[in-house]
Every structure is written in C-alpha cells, then in structure tokens.
Image (tube, rainbow, N blue to C red; front, side, top):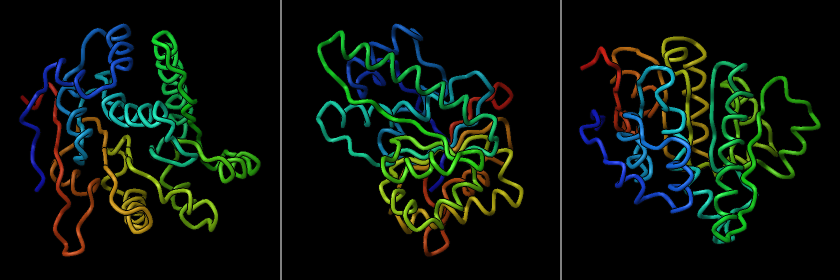
Length: 248
C-alpha cells in the first residue's frame, strides 16, 4: 500500500540508526535535521520505498543519500565494501549530475576525516558520473572498477542496461534515487525510465526506490511511477513524504 508518512522522527531517533561518526559529522555540519530528513531517513533505512516532495534547499537530496551512505560506511568499516555499485542516482538534468557528485564527494571526505579522528581508516567511497559526455576511457575504467555510487541520466541508464559487461555491474544495486521526478512523471523520458527500472529489478532483484520531487500532484500517481508495480499489477508499497508548505 502507498501511504502518506505520518511519523516525524526525533533527531535522536535518526542519530540512533547512524554510525556514531556519521552522526557526529552531521551534528557539526548541520546541527539539526530538516523536515524531509525527519520523515524519510529512518524509513529508507528500514528499506521502505519513499517519495519526497519538498521545496528546493530543504535537504531532500541528503535525506535520500544518508541511509545509503551510512550503510556503505559500515561496510567499509567492516572491510566488506566491494568494488560494486550499491547506489544509483538518476537525474534528467545532465547539468545537475556533476554538482551532485561534488555535493557527495565533499561530505564523504569530511566523514572519512571524522572517522580518522576517532581512529578508523575508511576505504574511499567512490562516486562517478556516467552520461553521454563520459569518455569511453572513463566507461572502461568503470567496468574494471565500478564506483560505489553511480550518477546517471535516464537515457544513459537505458544504454548501460544494454551494455553486456557494464549491465552486470548493476546487479548489486541496493538503492535507486530518482531526482527531479516532476520533470519525468508525465512524459516519454519518464516512461522509458520506468521500463529501465523494471529491467534493473529483473537484474538486481528488489532495491529501495527513492523519488525526489518539487511540488507535483497527484502525489499518489507520482509514487506509483517511482515505485513501479508488482507482477500482479498492484502498485509496490511505499511512503509519500509531503513537506510542502502549501500542503498543510
């Protein structure tokens, strides 16, 4: 069942699911969680599909990534972080992709610093962008040593799923984040992406689906687009986090 989030978690409840140094980093950098983070982070951590609709600048991108980063860091700490893709981030805006990479690399290096202070040496969590601008040399490198977090566009994902070698690297995906959903939900690019995500599901099995969107209605329909459908045609379950000022 698709339902609206009814539970806003307290900061302490969110800190409780984060590894202590990540919580420490977050506290130093931001001090407190934003509304989308209070509703979404714990649910994503539990493995729920989540659609977050909130204004720009409200911390929704970090809401989407925080639980996944936490998991990658824990794997790294335990020496279990493999050379494989765990997180797939898809945005229709190619220009956004390099920003997102920078916006991830900075926190990841800051988090490593906090771990270092506390006496842990973390392996690097690699982030890479794969779009039509990516050179074939870079693409070859990704086949040999895939990033842990892959940033791409709907079109490049479709091509990657058709690439015999690279598609095998997508078998390990655990989280898929679809950004700017409002720019995709009602057009052909969105239809193609929905198909690609089902192909990915056939390849990788179940993964957590996270949609990020500016204001868009009706949210239930948008959630069905992001979460997809079960084999019997019923919508996959998940939670809608709607923190737009106008919706209250």
